Length: 378
Image (cartoon, rainbow, N blue to C red; front, side, top):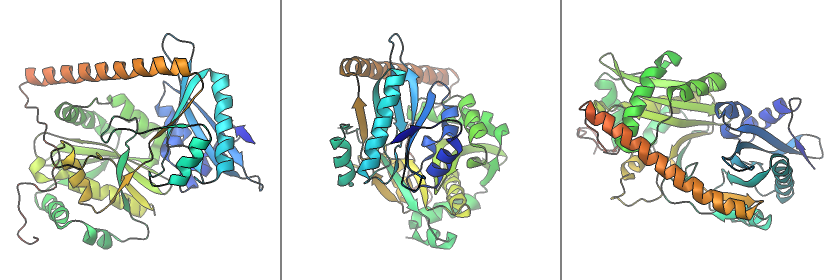
């Protein structure tokens, strides 16, 4: 039987998802507080010993102009992915929440690889429809990520495994005088401005400063802001999260100028070292494109992350349980169109603002090999 998590069992739920190998910060009630426009609910299933053996949280949002809500489970569920009984009970728990909150559908994007055929078979048997995302970044969560196994590794072992060009650029960054500092919320204004510059350059919508503040407030010591400085000025930054056995590189920003001093290499290395400090198993570089053709504009991002010798991971995609098919059909089309219109409007406004200020807008992806050629490594 499933149970709906309440205030009396919330701490037990949080401890379970943080300590489970499939746990994810996106399943936490702490992350739900960052997503203030959504309501948080969770269900759990207990084993014969009375302890939680499976859990799943959802964010619930009221849809505009209709009396229905959407339930979304980011990287859920958290359980043995081949335990069909637990997955069935969690599914029934979601159905009970859907009835309570008048949800027309449940969407989830599990932290399960596409090669896990048994998990996919179980989910389809339980009535879920599997959706295959594109190879780029059109989904809510990336379908492809780079992950670095850091379990029981030393700094020297990781460094030696890096691509020679990555090691060179990391050392070059230090020689050029780049300094990476662990910063507090006082640097979020600067980080947000550099993020705006990055979004304008690369064509994506940027979160406001208040969003980054909320992450640092709600995640506390589990969130870190790293900033790279050169000659006294901040030129790049990253926001990372540690939860359970993983550290995630969540957001990154870099100025159009000063890219030749390679701040991104030092920033990644500092986040990797955090994963070692906290005895994690995995450092997650987050999204890359699944289209690995060299003419893809995102190929440079792939090369940059590949240089740290991680593994390219393809997730199994999005699963959907539809409770009201007609409503789902209409709202899905409307939401997709609205998102694309909003994205184009925001990017257009930012580009026009940059042009008025006579700021060059570059669209060059991050490259593994920069202009500086190594003399000591071929």
